[in-house]
Amino acid sequence: LPRVRQRPHVRASYISEVAFNELLRSLGASGTEANERLSVLYTIAFRAGLRLSEVIKLRLKDIERSNERWIYIRDTQLDDGKSDSATRKIPLGVLLTDQEQQRLDAYLAPLWGRMQKHANALVFASADGVLIPLKVDEVTEPLTSRLFQLTGQKYTFHHLRHSALSRLQLVLHHQVLGLHQLPGWQHFLPWTEDQCARIYRTITQISTTQSDYWALAQL
Image 1 (spheres, one colour):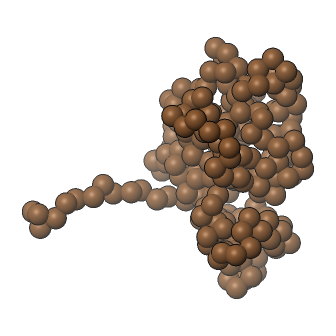
Image 2 (cartoon, one colour; image 1 turned 45 degrees about the vertical axis):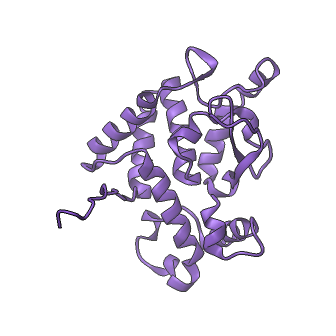
């Protein structure tokens, strides 16, 4: 109808484990420092569901130096907000596979010392300085172009977050759905049944008074 306002169509696509691992292999083939940085950045977004604006401003001090690797999403000097208090916290450690954890540790190891001189040093800093974030197209263009080459699908950075949250919804119901008894479940989940149970406990412990979906919505 003419008077009905047309809302923009939201594209919601899911990136499979196979496609994402192919993306990482494609980036790793060159062996460059820039591509390794992107591989870690994409992994954090794909597992923890960080938005593009959140991951490019992520600081070293926002990642807890423990096995749990909690990430604290805060307002920073790169935002309009004035507070440095955490607005969300995400249990990154439990969401990573062993290989992804090793990759993250190797990437972060030479960076921790930057905080001695720069308290707000970024995790994914530009080559122009440790306090200067990457440009948006430096992050999005390699992702979209490589995934299109690998899959023929037009993905955007937001699809990393959408995939992360969709995957965690499966975790909430993995027992009822019997996911690990289905053929090809590895296309949707990288975790065993025991690991899914651990993720479930960690996420739901964020709030002991609300529903599972309320806890998931806080990520």
